Amino acid sequence: MKCPFCHHEDTRVVDSRLGKDGNNVRRRRECPLCERRFTTYERVEEILPYVIKKDGRREPFDRAKIVSGMQRACEKRPVSMEQIEALVDQLERRFQECGDKEIPASLIGEAVMDALHDTDEVAYVRFASVYRQFKDINEFMTELTDLLKNSGTG
Image (tube, rainbow, N blue to C red; front, side, top):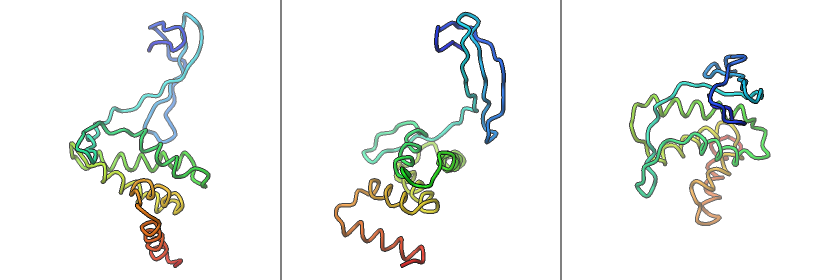
């Protein structure tokens, strides 16, 4: 592993620990040249499907995009980063296990909305308003009305 500080190509592992979720290994490394320490994470390379965008383009599945979208939706809400990571882990596993080589972006968006709906309704409405690109306040109100009906508070 190359040192991120001095770029020396031979570093040594000082300590290895299993990650909290058991899906990765955290390694503390030290560079013998500059003597600085850094952390790396090792996880199994997963083969995820390509995402088919609305315009027909295909791009690799990008976990970071899902995490980022969920973080924005959950901003200033009582949803921890650990909860977001766990939700994305579940979604990623689901898409991996479906066995498809390509999945439409709309399927991912709907799955994220479902996960947020069950986690935090405000975050769900935030994500839905961006994802569904409501044309006017009436579409937005229809979504809110449906949410209230389905949650039993309306």
